[in-house]
Length: 87
Image (cartoon, rainbow, N blue to C red; front, side, top):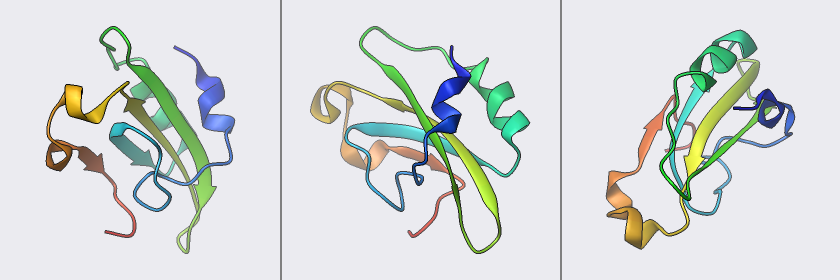
């Protein structure tokens, strides 16, 4: 898995939607996001997504998973969000 996704200047999907994102976690320390990356297991066709941004508290990094199709993956209400913003 690659840590380059954390260099993307991109807000967490609950603030700015990310097409077919189904799971993401937000971290205040980059190292915590890097550690989390090593624990993600992807199914075929799934892809790592992530980024870095700032809010009123400070910097944050997020890591998530994108699937080819929300409908094939499951119900949209089952999307997991950890450390959400804007909900």
